[in-house]
Length: 54
Image (tube, rainbow, N blue to C red):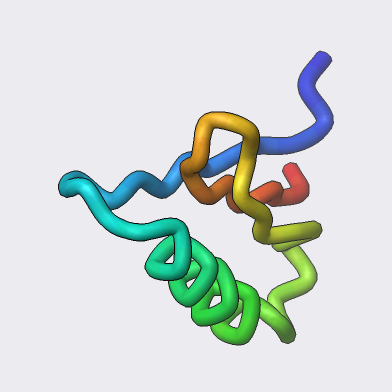
């Protein structure tokens, strides 16, 4: 039984790692007060994941 949901965010063009870090920081700030979001992070594949509660 799944306990959560992951949202994968990918930029559809070639960008520097710094762009993903900036986006991660922006999304973290945006979801800071949203209790449905556990964590915003960059995964091993280089995309951003938003870990949400069910």
